[in-house]
Length: 208
Ligand code: 5GP
Image 1 (spheres, rainbow, N blue to C red):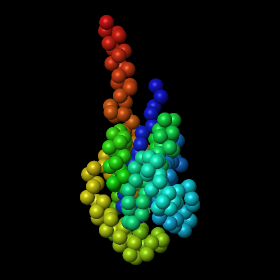
Image 2 (image 1 turned 45 degrees about the vertical axis):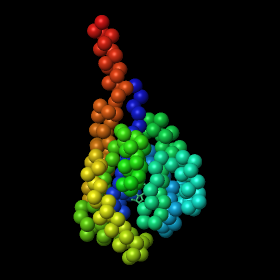
Image 3 (image 1 turned 90 degrees about the vertical axis):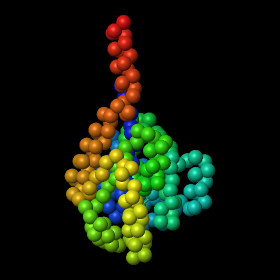
Image 4 (image 1 turned 120 degrees about the horizontal axis):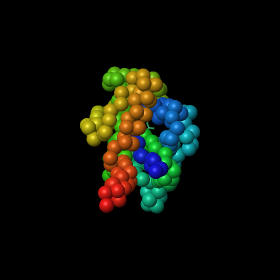
């Protein structure tokens, strides 16, 4: 029986290093596909169109919403972010696990639409480290850093809604840990309905 792909939602405060983690996960193991989101924010230095994000105008974003082109979207620190539908559905169909690196409002919408999605929350070892990482990145102004830290405080209220917490202290260890959690998630009964139905049918046939 062909193993179906599952949606892996990864959230975490801005500055926790989610992007690096996800890139490393996809490089280290086969069978993961990383979804590229659409956003109305401007590219940071070094970010490329279609790689980190599809950078679009507000008008283009609104038109994607109207055409049902996004599986979820949310507003974050005055910009829109959303997950394009086509790529995600095609990859899941092909049996790959699709990773969405999105914030909490979007994560909860995904859980409603895809009840078997796995929700992971990445945390820094402590809050001081988070601030240090945001400042070190050097791409945001002090005002924006403050806004992102306030947003982190807000997002921390929703951590219990996730399935697992992953602490990003040592990159390699964190990637291995995430991969193990995802592999374990594949084995739960709710993600194996077809397998369970089949064994029940087979047992029935044997018993008659
Ligand atoms: P950043 O501007 O730092 O790249 O992203 C800001 C926040 O938006 C992060 O928490 C990131 O996970 C989230 N984000 C990125 N893409 C999406 C998306 O497609 N949908 C939602 N809901 N959030 C997203």
